[in-house]
Image 1 (cartoon, one colour):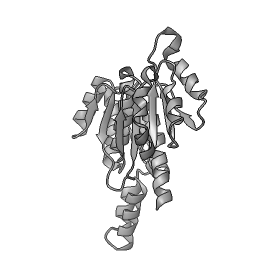
Image 2 (cartoon, one colour):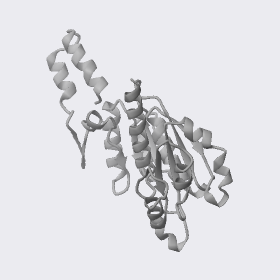
Image 3 (cartoon, helix red, strand yellow):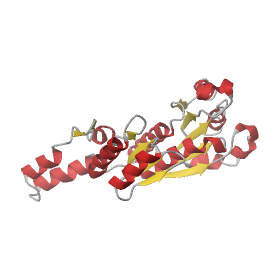
Image 4 (spheres, helix red, strand yellow):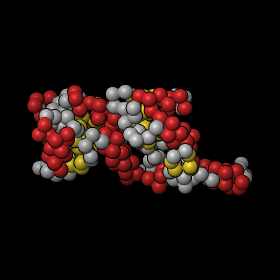
Length: 255
């Protein structure tokens, strides 16, 4: 349930196209809906503009499918399952016709955002090919929510000349999501090239002293280029949500 859907429901009541009882039925599960093993937060989309996402790890395939089905039936925004195992994805694909699974990123696109999603474009930049699963999680989340995702891959600082040709792209888009492992230097480089907001995603790519992404995380948090926002290790979904909020704020400012 989002603002547009709620407004239409109230307009229908005011115009006599729907009864009060019909409106109450439509709002009955607005705060949350109980499904086996979970309480689905349908009110989150109204509060934040983004529907609840389903985090796969720790849930049974049936639980993931039940929550995904409940969200898809009511949400106007994109419905996603993150870090889904193949058996979880299979259960969702059976429960929700039209759902799609990207095996490399582990993202299940249950439902795309409906009409009215704010337009915009976000560049998703990955330092190396090994970072692309996390970058693809971010790109697919952005696209599912109604924005365009410009994928720029394999432009890490080991060959920094590769990223310089994209400076015009960075200035043109609304936000840049930068995904990098190892020492995590790429977000600092890009933030030093553009005034566009930069959201940095450390990945767990790297040898032993990388400590499964901790070195990249600390490097990004210690960026000498000001204005870099950093999300958690391997959190492409979270970076996409930050970028989408930036896009929505820009569209509101332009309205």
